[in-house]
Length: 443
Ligand SMILES: *Cc1c(COP(=O)(O)O)cnc(C)c1O
Figure 1: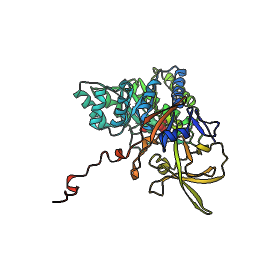
Figure 2: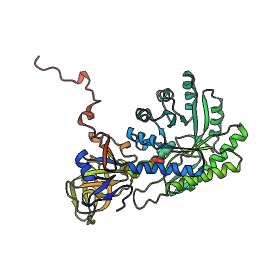
Figure 3: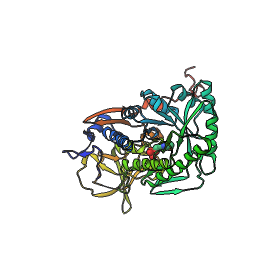
Figure 4: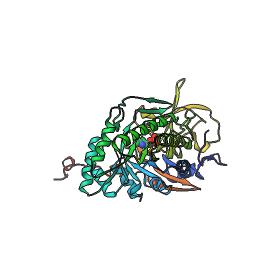
């Protein structure tokens, strides 16, 4: 069993996280339940900040809030000195309601609506990451109407694509995001940006992928961005003050995953920046990164109650839990793999190989295939690890299943960060149009 953060097995043989016995958490808050190891979230945030401090460069570590956007998480990001990425009015609203300083909010997205842009301008956010020519014109016009100047980065597609162990350098990248570097559209975007009176061009942004386990892709991206910065300086007399290298730093979901320590990703990036820019006599830019998964992913654990069992002799044994693709769609979407234990019998040896099914009306609603467990009984507690990122954030009400609660645990204390949805919540936005209502009876 791989225990990380503050997770351990206590004297009762129960899984404990943040000093809280998970069986007690299940009793108090019900299941399914997302449990967040607050100390581990803070530790991950500090690993980034400390690694950047060691480089001597100016920096911002922007938590990509799409990984897990709730007000309590924004509060922690604020306290740890992080900046925050948002990609919708909902994420922006969450951050602002949490009291996150607007000046440290960066707005991403390939199709920000005029309403979202106005909301962000009114809030005086720190930066817009402009994705395309339409947005460039729109943002300039809307900022002008408000008599404001908007700070921007231009999102470029550097032609480096990284996924876990593979990274490829492509001439022209087929992506819905950003200005292409190879075909000259990034260059044209710089020219247009500096002509817009209501925009202040701070620099460029690049994001090369997710769950990346090597530094090579980041180094290639820095090389391309630096070469572009130098060309732009020499030909257009524009000096980028900020270079944003995006997110995508990998985490360990299962033993197959071998991420690097955070400081190694950061060091590879900062070393590459320092060598490329120094060699060109370029003032060292401020470096921004945008980790999402690697801040919250391994700090999350989902607790489920075991329900029914179905055994197909010689084929497989299914163990069903009281959640599934509604609280964790990643296995169904991406064939993602997870590890899990029986939290109430965590010191018992595995006796059989089973597969964990969700409760949705969908054959694809499987959480884990071929998991070694002690013989599980109805009422046992299953803990699935590494569910902090893109789980609650991607949860749905399919089958009108209620979204679980989220608790933050630390030093033996458990605090609700999101309430479990009620049955009332399920119908709260439903309306029966008058013409569908039953005629009054008795007339
Ligand atoms: C998704 C995304 C991130 C965060 O990715 P992680 O894999 O969660 O670190 C950062 N920047 C951009 C632009 C993204 O789209």
